Amino acid sequence: MGVVYYANYFVWFEVARSDLLRSAGWSYREMEQEGLALPVIAAHCEYRQSARYDDELEVRAVGSLLSPIRLQFDYEVVRPADGCLIAAGRTEHVALDAGGRPRRLPDRVRELLA
Figure (cartoon, rainbow, N blue to C red):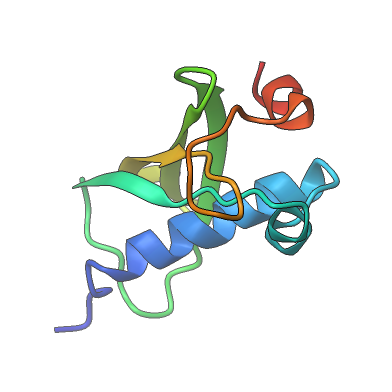
């Protein structure tokens, strides 16, 4: 059909989220080594325009705290050539310890998202 498959947006959200955390000096790998996991507990995407194969796209991510153990990332997928907002979405995450039990978000994560 020449348009981007809808599920790819969630992959792009994950990449943008990882890049955001990495730019703040903390990778997912380091988080997991320190006993923190941030699994997705909800995901949503609103498709506004079709992205076509070979479109250059920019994916923007920002994070916010929802509670001491939950956070949300919001995303925008934009086509820089014309400034068109292609899609907008969000993911919610819960902080878990190495044993899979809920835990408070570390200070460094709360400071990043404050």
